Image (cartoon, rainbow, N blue to C red; front, side, top):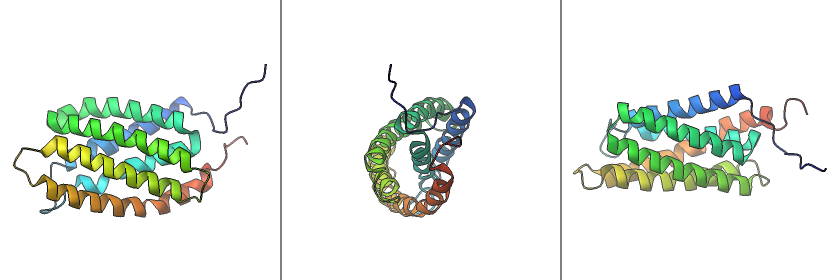
Length: 184
């Protein structure tokens, strides 16, 4: 029997646990921070949340899209469960919905672009993920609340896009250690 050999390294349980924990910290922290306006056009969550795309893209590069999706789904469940206690139910629901939609788009787009220039996959997938995440989150979390959510959404998206671009440097730095499995 000829078995297909994956081009991706297998993810250990410890690596999976660390990845889910990282995702949980980013999402729960961002759910707390999104409730605190920095000014009239931005919440603190806009500064922290884009790190979730860095986590996903590093996992996708090293372990492949299936592992990245698995972490996204486990991260989603864990973050949603914790977010219900640290944020309002509406914020938790909006965050969960926006997170899983954006992460799945990010993973799919990244995988399709992975063999192009090193920066294209994380940049394009991060931009698309940020746009989707922002639109879904703010419309579900703040529509009809009286909060200046459209202004927050615009500011949040601008910052997410800027942070997404700044995440290219750590992504590139991490790529040097992620190019091949340790035993290859």
